[in-house]
Image (cartoon, rainbow, N blue to C red; front, side, top):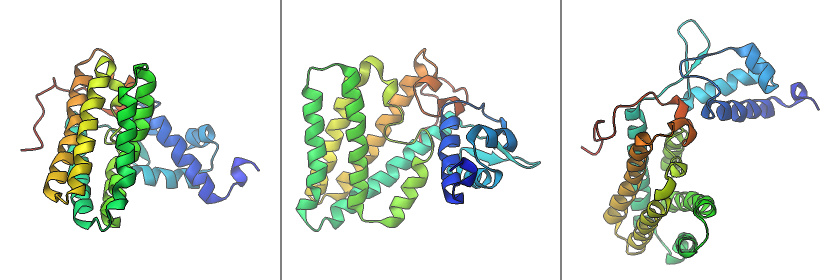
Length: 257
């Protein structure tokens, strides 16, 4: 079956995934206008599913409507990045508090403990940082997904999903930027993971929330380090090419007040 014979939903998803990957990979410059016909040819889809994909990407914040019609690639300031990370911390902090308050059965916490224990074993291994990094990324992603599940809130899940759609807001967005500081970053993050689990187990909602918010701010500190490095942000962070040139680290406002 050719791409033009695929069901409309399949074409829309195909266009959405492919175009999102191009945007995050730096295929288009910030502010660049997205021409429909060349994009249809490049993605192998018709104009209707492409337009639906563009609407979805507009909701994600990756593109915006142009005044004279069509869409252009969105760009972000460093403050936008900081705000997205801070907002993720607020939502994940709420998820941790909900989990502590709504934990009906201690056994529900076992999958989260298992992730922490597996990450402990990984970090105590003497293998190379590169493969440890890759495995830790997967465990980190699973930890955050399980934490959200324990919150038991569909409203919170939808809100966090919208924030995580931004290229720099994911808990794993900046891990590849850590270089020689990777082990230290993973060790600190792991201690925070363990503290969150312990607080939930003890039904200490306020403590779980505070640690989860601080955990997100670790990503913000890592971002500052990435901005201070010689390597372009686009090479170490998904969607980094969409971030406008930044002021020196430490000069942007403190979202924590």
